[in-house]
Amino acid sequence: MSLRGKAAITGIGETLFVKEGEKTIYELAAEAARLALQDAGLVPRDIDGLITLGALSTTARMNNTLASYLGIKPTYSAEASVYGASGGMALKLAAEAIASGTARNILVIGADVNFLKHPSNEMCELAEAYQKPFIGAGINQHYGLVATLYDHLYGDSSVERAKIAVMQRYNASFNENSLFGHKPLTVDDVLSAPVICSPLTLFEIVAPCDGALAFVVSKGEDAKAITDTPVFIDGVGFYSSHMLLTDADLWRSGLVTPIQHSAKIAFEMAGITPDDVDVCGLYDCYTIAVILTLEDMGFCRKGEGVRFVAEHDLTFKGDLPVNTNGGQLSVGQPGDAGGMVNIIEVVRQLMGKCGERQVKDAEIGVTNSNGGFFSNECTLVFRRGA
Amino acid sequence: MDFFNEATKHFFAACEKQKLWLQHCPVCQKHIFYLRGFCPECLGPLELVEATGKGKIISYTIVEKNPMDPYFAQITPYIAAIVELAEGVFMYTRIITDETNDITIGQDVEVIFVKQNGKTVPAFQPVYQAR
Image (cartoon, rainbow over all chains, first blue to last red; front, side):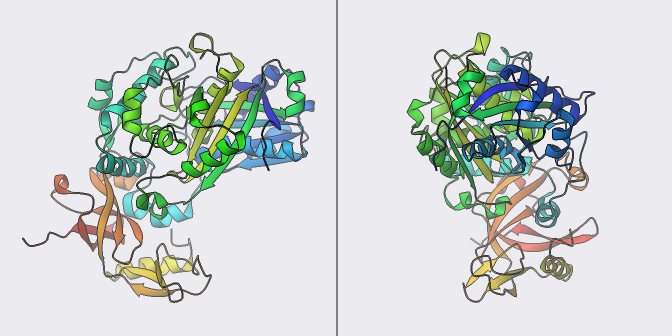
């Protein structure tokens, strides 16, 4: 079933992103929810659906607590649990629930506190058994493995990977709500920074933070009565091909990720091609992820991502604006809500609320959220409603 | 980690005896790793088989820092890799070598067993062909 236009985002909210703050995950989540409701001009009794994101710092099913905390009595309640793809997935679930008639206004909330400082007792038994004893716990190794093979197959990507971090940092210099926007970054800075997992250096890797983001998703036909700046959800696509990176198809396909599938589903539903896209929010846990996403979404062919980045300006002033708030690399990564950092900015662009960094006449935006190690991918296509 | 499933318990017990076990589906004629309760294609029973221990490097990364793992944080730098075994399955592993700079994608490797944190686990070392 095509969901095109069946649901629209009518309100957005984000808290301050801080490296380590005093607020609990519930205080952050509730604050983002309040801001999104106020943005939509709605109150809790208008909300009949709630979707939260599985957090890294707690094992609580937050949809239950937050419904109570916010005074919502939902006819739809769910938690998206596909790691970093959860932000996209939660909005996909919201659009599906609204299209099916099970809810009319759904609050989607992602929140986390810095998981390095607040680890949960969450455990993934499969990774405990088959990753941790072999290469150690952690995520960085995986993206190092992918980047090493990328360079081997398609040539040195180090300068262009650095350029991604630098262009996003430039964008972040126009975004006060970013951890690193006040710190200028050059390609040389990235290249000369300490290597964490070769070939990736410190500035190619996200920093975890505290923060929360929220969206109100409403029935498409109600959207224009609720707000002057609705943003319609025109396409949604999800695809998952593995859990552990050892089971990934990408090793045998020249690094084609599941994004190729999720993007195809979403673009076809929306009836668009990459040429139609005015602004992108591409999951940027690591610089290499942006290159693979550009390729697998179809902005260029496989293996041409480096040349594409060299030849294009990805800042908000450029020919293909990507992560115009600075992305997670500059804003910070609030756990598995990190994907929402990329998404909220695209929605804000299409609402025309980006101030100095507004992309002129932005009408179509696409986002991708990546969970695990190119394990779960969720692509969304948005259209300006005003 | 012993209780992902029963087969995994046996896998690590075999490592203590310097044996690398995989599974094989006699119907699909495919090797399976990690170890499961049944074949993910035909749902039939799997047999345990000992791996040849030969493989090649699919990709690698030199881990300079690992703040996520207290044990591995102490042994940096180390080489984390994915190897494809001769049987066609992929495995995370460390590459043990004194010649870190000589590691390449596609390089032949063979299994060795290393003791870490009181537990024996497989690792791989380069096989250099005589010239």
